[in-house]
Image (cartoon, rainbow, N blue to C red):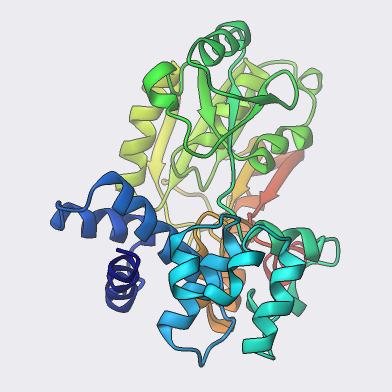
Length: 361
């Protein structure tokens, strides 16, 4: 059985080209191989993700060795797979990562946690490297932001469904990554699934009392609208404008806003890498100036690769520099549409200096 799981994982990984998220590729594979039961799918997924979480490490290792090593490092269970494929590691399956690293180095002398993540020396100085690398070995928990007025009801429904949760503050909640939220809660209207870092962006919003009337906000890289909903809940009295350069994404945003109860807003498609200045005038932007521009710019997403570990082996320096150049143009072009005394909130989910401090400087 375990050799079958291994061979299936090898097949999936070998045929993955990286053109779509790995989670979608995995679902597609299982849709065409319906004989695999839920237990089989769980095993194969664990093997594949163990492989992906090795990132750039053991580049010359055989795929079988990388899968077994990744599974051993990223899981803490004594089971038949470890016993069958790596019997010498069985007694250490439940030990710490540091103990496992010693064993792995006996087989691969150059292996280290630092070798997992690409261009580690180019990350921001404030990053806790060890904690960050350890986090890459596990599937992250889910974070939700409860919307105002729904705190008690959401807590009550979670308890009724016997789902364990950790209330970080009044609105932020941490839950196990496999929690079936859509089956017990009203997504968008009661809560928004949103990583804690994204939720904390509200700490940088200018205070509501700075504005006499509606706060004119432009979420210029809105995607599915998570930051817009955050701003809507924070200010309550807003004149909201959203844009993105992907029409399909704006259609998804419209559906999400309807579920969230957001009706009065302006939405338009715009490529912010090529925009005329406010002084020169433009027919594409409904308002000439805004109190607050939220620029959650396209980035490598390197701070979230624990969720998408396939990106660790796909990224290149050229791609990072290209993204930084795009980010610079977006920030530069949107600044021209901020009122005197207004605010730009520049956001990335990257850990690379070039995409963060580099652009801001």
